[in-house]
Length: 403
Image (cartoon, rainbow, N blue to C red):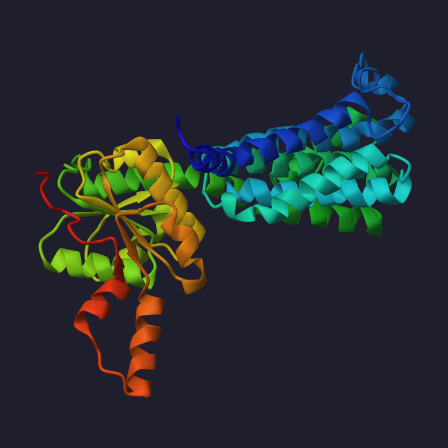
């Protein structure tokens, strides 16, 4: 029977790997609630958008329009959170903050809605580190949201300032037409702003249109173009033969120094990092050599398999976070129990806790350095055996052959 600590570690690992899914579900639920009820307003959203004729719309019922779009944006943004996209996290924070502020001011009696939005917002802040990836899918979602917001702003603004145009804008179709022509800076000149408020509004639409279209094109097509240019310049990358190598998790000072020393000894190294591929060149510059880099979550079984964890000599968890190092070792032992593991402890106070994960080597440079300094200052003789035992814990015979 497996010990209770095994199930505890398995539960912690599942929580860390799946909590971004929970947050995405909460954001989606916030958006869905707006569809079901536009924050307590009597107007039915289905009736509101069941438009038979643009010329017969009662514009007093359009008050729910912004809430409908806000709900749609939140539900779409939840997809980006599933990819752990940082930009989706930032947009979710902004949209939820708008909902909380508006509901608190106009509908304070909706305590369940406020609690859900506020709780989701707090969880997003607490687990912001989980959303550290750059995703093309999330970028596309944000580009769509930006375009939809601008279209909504320009269309409704054109209706609001309709009397300030020549000819006057009095229906949704004319407002939509003027918005598209202005946003794309085509400007046929058939509808002209004549009043000062209408002109200022038109200027804002032009500036916002240029900004949104430029950023959207960069976000959506930038990665595609960059990938094509990289393939053209570098050619198709050769598949890596990851066997009898070391896997280093993290790009801390200790990790990069270890990588450099291993490379100096002609040993193969694969580096796992949470940094995006755009930062690979900077990491190689810091390490002082070319590296086999993989981007992603070092506790993810798919990434560990891609890195060749079953054929490697050892996995070195050398990030700057002791908890992350412990989870990496637990993940490796769960996926490939025979793989040797090395774990660094950055804070000596965590040593006893970290030992419980039973890594083959537990390395504490901080504790090692403090013991040497204290011995030198107190005049105590330095014992080589003691120094080795301080530097490494249970590391003897790491690569000994089985008898």
